Image 1 (cartoon, helix red, strand yellow):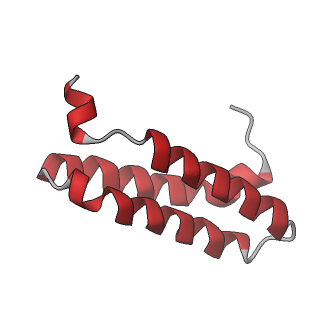
Image 2: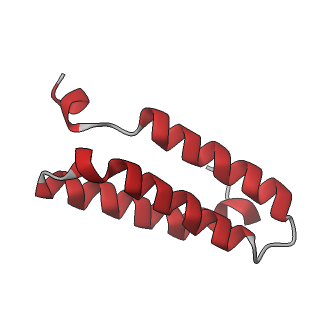
Length: 81
């Protein structure tokens, strides 16, 4: 993956989001916390975008990332299949 300034700007948000998914799955609370974890991910990215010169493109990318995890992030029952 080629690292761009935009990728670097949101990478910590990705790490935090992955941490939430991993830990809530281990605790058996993933389904209950998925929407909140995804929402926090979007908020984290938008907070970072607010500090970037290219705020518009950053927010567009953040929204795309958020929609992807919201749609494709695995729920417990999907992982069992």
